[in-house]
Length: 214
Image (cartoon, rainbow, N blue to C red; front, side, top):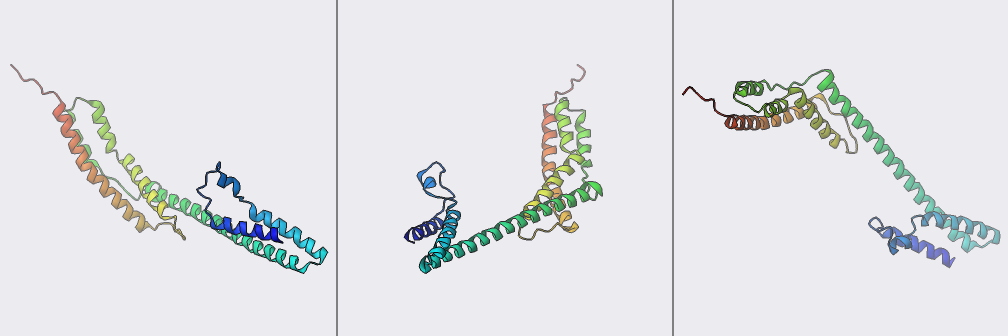
């Protein structure tokens, strides 16, 4: 009975300690026993049988109490594990729904459009003055509407995926997706206004001037 009490106290002390940051190679990790509750449960079952055969009421009461407490502990752990699994399943389902919603509006129904024609016109106007074809092509790719739509789609999708980590994740409505699209499109246009103008100025300034007649 004294040894059973020692094991109970050891488990209580281990529960209070935080072994999450313990180095697995340290003495603390060796002295701790992650299966102590299971070991104690087995001991309690054994001693309960001994107490019944020996008609030892005191030992029977102690071993039964330990077994009952550990049974409640295991049931709580099992419920917590099941809840975590349900949360993970709900999160996965929400992720799939969010991806499906974004694909639907961006690519299947083509609800959202990215119009960057003004930047293409700016590039075409300056193209004859730029000798570096590689830099010019790079700038054209920067304002490629399909590429930009894909980048916005990724950003919008990730925004809602982060939001889906809540307790009751729900797929976004069309209005929510559109609002997020508009926000990212405005940011894309803001950056393009600066980048395209600045790049064209640099490319045109670096181009050699045409020599006129002597």
